[in-house]
Length: 421
Image (tube, rainbow, N blue to C red; front, side, top):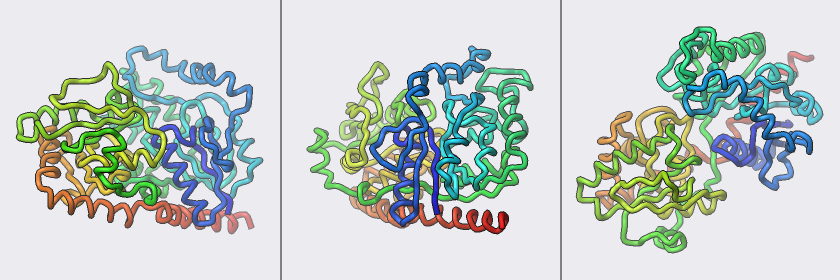
């Protein structure tokens, strides 16, 4: 079986890393897997760039043109909103590769036009990494439920018109995909429930398959050694926060962690705790939390990430929205407990008071309480660490993920052969 994964990038961003890991997992169990991406950063020979010299040269112009419709909404929220209206050449490129199964991942950013998907003429499995595939353009609907109808009057666009940009995008999706067969995969039960509630996909098949990771790379490393390598203090309890956009990504909830840490200053832990942050470098976004902050900058390889997870005592993932939450699963694989809110995809990763703590959404006092609970009892902390690693080994390995996908792919390939015979 020949599988082709489509994603905007092979390594940049959480969805890219998830797709690339699946690609590696499929290869690991003997499946012929390739990736077709807009931006290739790895040296992996089975990752193909869809860009040629001309499109590379004009990539910035294409991105600007892709975002032109949003200029009609100068008051829109500072979040990603994708219209995917520009034509592309991907159906022709995919036809030359001749895959048996196409696995779509994160295909926004001017990469894949909404209307191109039915042109592939192959069985398609779409792995959802956020809510965009079934909304009118937003990637997380936040408190809005208009995606359960037909969008319009979009709060993220600050629009009061029913026939706004979000309705236009929704209508294009509804028309293009009306009679087209799609199998949907979500990495969490929460996202699957959102799919089932959506007007676009509520009648589609949805399979929940958690994202996988290489548990031979993400594994516990001696804490003292890891701190020495990273130049982190040996005599402090270290909290970890990480995000691609660092403290500036509002969906990742750094402001909530900030409030929780201010709560912790009232406890006896104040002189014992320091914060470690990866993603950004030290910047103007630094805040006085009452605790010392160690900025590690952007980390680009799994070994360094595993070293960081192993060096700290607890990972805090205070996200407002997560389709899954790979930093949480990576942390568990390294034997480090996770504190998060009992909401969205993180509920599938963190088991309350077993491998971490799930705080009441979005109560910063309970988030602080959870951090303290994880740290205050050394014997309990050691047990949490052990169970954390067990969870990763039992549910999040690349082989487990790849075999679950292979089951879905094989069923679709068989059905395709029967229908074409």
